[in-house]
Amino acid sequence: MTILISQLKVFNMDSREFRRRGKEMVDYIADYLDGIEGRPVYPDVEPGYLRALIPTTAPQEPETYEDIIRDIEKIIMPGVTHWHSPYFFAYFPTASSYPAMLADMLCGAIGCIGFSWGSASEATLVALLAARTKMIRQLQAASPELTQAALMEKLVAYTSDQAHSSVERAGLIGGVKIKAIPSDGNYSMRAAALREALERDKAAGLIPFFVVVTLGTTSCCSFDNLLEVGPICNQEGVWLHIDAAYAGSAFICPEFRYLLNGVEFADSFNFNPHKWLLVNFDCSAMWVKKRTDLTEAFNMDPVYLRHSHQDSGLITDYRHWQIPLGRRFRSLKMWFVFRMYGVKGLQAYIRKHVKLSHEFESLVRQDPRFEICTEVILGLVCFRLKGSNQLNETLLQRINSAKKIHLVPCRLRDKFVLRFAVCSRTVESAHVQLAWEHIRDLASSVLRAEKE
Image (spheres, rainbow, N blue to C red):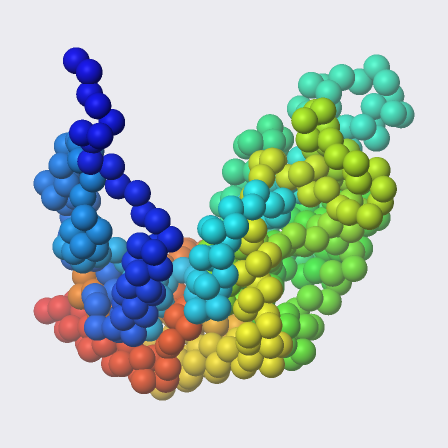
């Protein structure tokens, strides 16, 4: 059956329509963010709720923009966790700002496939793969009879027992052993524990090649002792990677720069501006001490990617620095944010969050039923009811079931702990105070129920 093109109903958004709908979308986004405080921070739907609300097949004919926008509120929003709500205190911040959103729009329009970094997880993997390649080449240069497969079986990487799971995943992808170093009483990796593990493994014929130091762990925002661990890595010829995904943004403030002491020992360093520096997801930055360590591991130079400037020394070709070939133009978002906020504006934003976290800490300390579990340094407070893990699990379940605020837990040694992370760009003291009153009220009901 022949269908004439003229018979088809074809949707084609031209520049005039784009201007109109774009302005409407900006208004929708601004209204959403202005009113986000009034939305339940956590969705009140069950997994799979969408199945009954959407058709089983894509529409044969184009639908109207108005219908799509109406369905955003009707179908999509009920299932959304509102990460930018001032009552979202879970995980860590996911950055957001109007300048970054504007830049993201421009990013989409330009459509440039740039060469930049993806995430802290990928940065750890890239560093591990580069360190693996470097070590194998060094060993084969000294002993050409050694095969890569034989060496891979002996390579060992190390990280704190408080490190993010992405470090372990990097080891799985990289095909090497990852060993967790027991942290001290402050949940910090120290020199003595690392040295003991290195000596034990070398005596067993294994080859240490990679250490990840975390500055600001996900569980409790603890800091591995970089000044102690760094010199050991340099002495042993072991690659040292710093994961500062969350805490790295705070280093723009002079009063937190001490947390970075020892960075000179690192071979690579990563942090995520999309966590705490007002650059919306995704945007992650990585530095490496010696670029050839990466480029020699990832260099791919097919003829269709060659260009006249690649050997001039005038440019840095980042396609040799990573796993994917192309990335979005993320640096544009950072450029907008840095220029429109300025260093002082960004510092003020970080300091406000830290101040609010200490305000929450003070409130917790005033209630003898609760305890603070770790030192509060940046924007995270780890706390719990004095009592059993079950008591605290019940409290957290009540908090999240009420859907007024959102928290997530962590385990510190054998304790179940609640995490209160200052996250939203719009959070104020009033939100912290209301959150604490809500937590206290639920704690009272949980304790009454336990007595009964």
